[in-house]
Image (tube, rainbow, N blue to C red):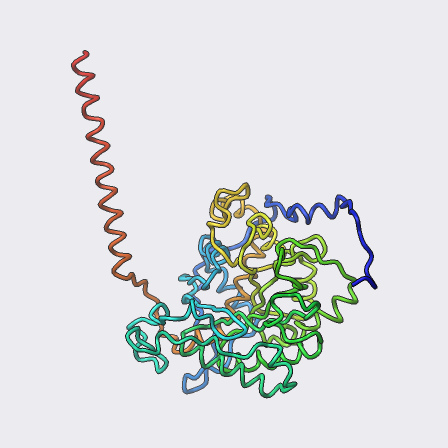
Length: 429
């Protein structure tokens, strides 16, 4: 470790560097003429699917077709905020576009047991006619599917056909568990043997990682499972990973780490990408427009959805900088920003409604996710006659009833509390 390294005793950031280091890359402001929300265009998510004469889905409307923009314009600002700010274990339903709720699950070694066990959280009685349906009273409902080999073992086969078959097996598991997005594969490099995530990354070779990632994504997509490659980019350690600044030359970035992701993203084999915890230079990589937009969108032509990793540091991985830079949805909830100086997107709705640029970024994020999910197993069984209905479980109805009773009692007790004061006042008169 003594050769090739130059010890840096201290570093004084420039003013330009401090913009990123203080996570203040964008400020919500008044600009432009606004965008359209809540339009009555008569479109649904299902109408973006292409079918043959037998009603079998054969593809989706081209990404550049104006119909996608018309569909996105039907979404309300409230729905858009909720979808972007609450992208944790699932992707929220968007009723105005008739998009059902979508479930996604970790990770590269198979679906995480703690999230999938007990498929009753995914399946309902209304799904009982589905050939993959698993009722909660079946012993299979508690099966774990975190059983795949680690990625270095897979890469050691140098067998793209085998890795594609592995992706197909993931797709079959997804149908069984009613999952539409898998948070895998991991495509970071083994830059050091001390990265605790190396078991989720293929190798120290960027071309081998590129090829393994493409093969895996071909397999999952063939079964309608959206692969979510991670962690874009430059994640080389787990300890203190949030906020660490990674410095490199552009040549080093393109020949190594970025090449790992380039194949799956440029060929749009992966339907979504999870960004990393670290910074690229001084800017949080999920809010780094040079990575997610310039390279990902404009150079590689990636059309899928971006999502952050688990929000760890609300002001660091903040929704303002991330959305404005094209970084997509937030793997968290409004609770992450509630009580912070920034506040939640819901609380900032009025300010957002006056920021045309920011709203355009929101709508593009929605478009990319709608486009990816239209190609997933989420569309299975849907047709032009499909309708969405809101169904509340018994416990939620009980909570609604309890809320109503408590509201009535609050009003009653308030009235009773005020009554003696009025009587006392009359006696004084």
